[in-house]
Image (cartoon, rainbow, N blue to C red; front, side, top):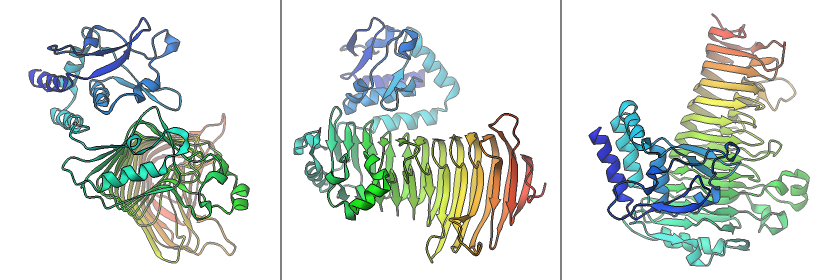
Length: 509
């Protein structure tokens, strides 16, 4: 155990001057850090720490966590590495509960030695030590005149801070700091690159909010984006803050038409290669919450995306013309697709996404233009769909041309989902029937289980040149309604099926 112990002693010593706000059992809050010369947290003898007020134990307010300065966040990351549980308080804010009693640290260390590959630990430790290492040049928006009162337009202050950051040629990544305890009102903004530094950092610990009515938006007739970031490579955008699009006025289509406005996407990335977006909470976008257009080598992780289930066109994440994208460990509950994958998108891995409510994870719609549209190598694994209108969906329009292939849905759980498995080549059906020249092929559904809210749990509605090489393997879907059965329907699809219920008549056993 010596090697493992020495790694964490090194980490603890690197935090010698830091402190961690804790709530102790007697309800008093105090700063517990290291005393000079100590080799362990002063909190190490306190058996704590909040799990739930309902259990009579203490609860740390999310505000205290958002107040942490950037270096102190590393302590929270360290506690996660030690096995502490991350808890969500309501719909916003994060909390963390641990047992750091007299044997807590020792037990955690023994657990790591037994169960975690040491190389993986070195990777985690390296990540911790390379985040906010004190050498970063910070550009705090408050220093550029931002008020953060939620009423004053802080747009110009943000642009000035961004200009300083983007023109700064430094060895360590420059960071735009959006501090906690503030709410910054922003009009539509474009943060444009390329920047002089190969890597830049936006740290969102506070909140940014859009205007709360259409009359307050500037140039709403030409809007398609609220916060846009273009041509910025190596961007790390993270934090515990919120991006609130205050979209409810936009969801009334009649109101939008009367004002002659165009619904904007809340956060739009164009040609941002090497992007990392993590930890942010995205709320109530007027339209899509996050769009990637022409971005490569992107990781989106640990995001929370929330809008009412009746909010129109509020996709969680929308991808177009992007490659090598990873989306992981994210919760999405909106009024449209949790994730929509559109033309020109390749090599996407989606894991650990909790979807619902919403319209599911969708490939498409495709075939919207006269161009040949393609989507390939899309893999969805270890995801859940709870109360969604659709589940694993592929949708193409009748007159489209192109192909979608090499797509897999594996290790999926459905909970009362509508259309759990659906290929719909009659999307936005037109008179005269489907004349689709768009081929959907090489689609795999494996280890899928759960319940369907509709009778047709599996629907393969293909037309035109059809959908060959569909594979169903260990699929088990039942009705979420008592004493009801489910069935599969097919049109012009072919492939194989094994250990699948309901039986899929167009697939060979």
